[in-house]
Image (cartoon, rainbow, N blue to C red; front, side, top):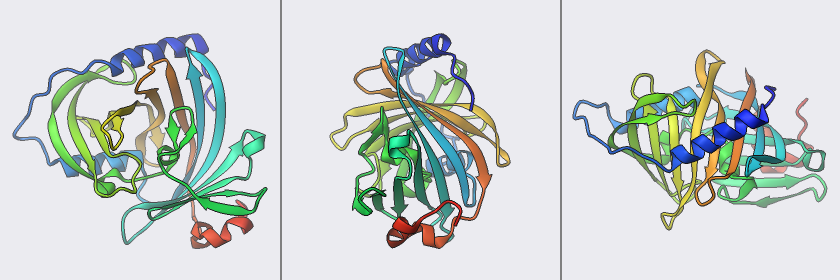
Length: 268
């Protein structure tokens, strides 16, 4: 795992927090591709086109100081019928959470605690750690859950503080089961990489701003390996989500059944 340089990271996070507060004016281009195709192209950069696994590490900062951390193993199975992913999340660290599981099967999200051997239904909007919600760590193709509309073209700063020419999409949830009611989503005009997103509640309150950065070759494409998530009210409350250990892998159908959770073993 890449070590975090705390002073430079704190400065970078502060700059990103400032960037989250500024947005240039939008200009429409009649020759731009369709919003839904742009969103699908961006999904293909975030997610491989077949079942895979990865490790996600969440690190929470307040006022530039590191608070909690959590490490998760993600198993994502591509559904050939719907095109969407089904996810099993295994808590790896800290030790107190080791062995706990989250299962996303369709619109159902379950949490399993091996101590009680019981699974309970939970919400994708529920906070997992810092600014990361349960739904944020799931592999999801947004084009299947949201209706996209092209709102304009803007030059913005990305998560590496570089200027990017981008498309701004307004995403509206197709149902009430998804994590966010509305998303503003900036996609690089040149390569369809996701750059930035603003996530809104059903009351249209800004919940958080995210920057997708640290693009690296993973499973055949340059993919974002770090997402910086900034609180919608307090820009000094920041959560960094790092992805590593990408690998194509079989995710057995049995792993994605609620009844199987008490018997789950990553070696099975």
